[in-house]
Length: 269
Image (cartoon, rainbow, N blue to C red; front, side, top):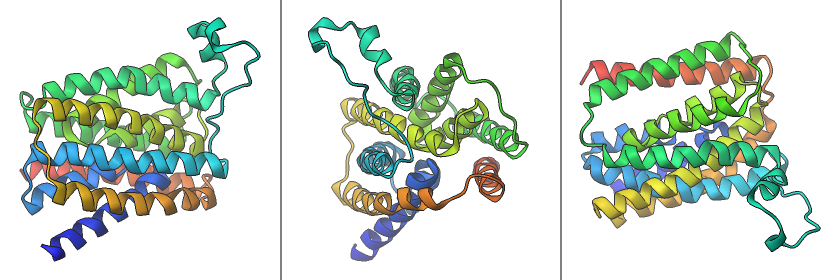
């Protein structure tokens, strides 16, 4: 039992480290690993969502502290009661607006995905996610950049969150690469994705908890501890990466590898 706990701790630490530095890979790597160990999918997904949410809240605060992203609110002279929702939204930083935009509709998509998780054939789901991730990685490698728009951010939120709710992974590669292709800066795209994922993971976890109530402390505890430790280091690594030239190639290559791995596992099922 101790050996299994140590392995879970190490794997979640590694996944949390990559996730907090690159904005992806946590559920994509951890989900199939836990399934191979023998855990029930109904237990795996909420455990991943819970541990990821904890670690990402910590990672977001560190990213903001290091200056990788700006989640501040503009100063408000009026009293909160005198402000409408639109006025409050205008005072949010652009990074925070993007995160909330992706997360808001994404939360709804996650709930729908979680409630329909047992009705969609896995081979169809995995094939679709794999192809989509590979396409995003290729566009990133080609350095394709589009003009930023809020409609693109909404589409990203729904698309990536639906993947997350159904499989426990697939959010990060699509949200990060999608933002970059849409004209967002690399570090801001990564940190914004992490905040969006944290909010969506909380909603997804609560949805699974209400429906299934299948939680294992011996799984959640090591996953959470390992992911939190990794999230302390990851933002500092992100700060040192130069996302031009080789940095962009590494990120694009990583996304293509994740998509290819998803397709390969699907074909081998």
